Image 1 (cartoon, helix red, strand yellow):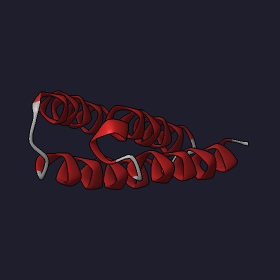
Image 2 (tube, helix red, strand yellow; image 1 turned 60 degrees about the horizontal axis):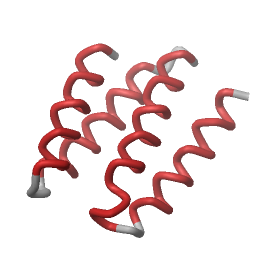
Image 3 (cartoon, one colour; image 1 turned 60 degrees about the vertical axis):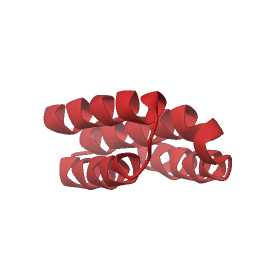
Length: 80
């Protein structure tokens, strides 16, 4: 069931990405949920990879939301 959850939240993250900056917070939440689920499945390295990709994406954006989410994503990656 958890492996299926990763696929579902990945799909949700893609949908939120279509909204650009307006869907950034929701996309971040989806990716973080997938990261923790990967860790719970014993695939922490996959979660770290997701976190790193999200950090790279957020690092390229400007604005207070992007900066806040970037810090949060870095914290999650450190805990994975």
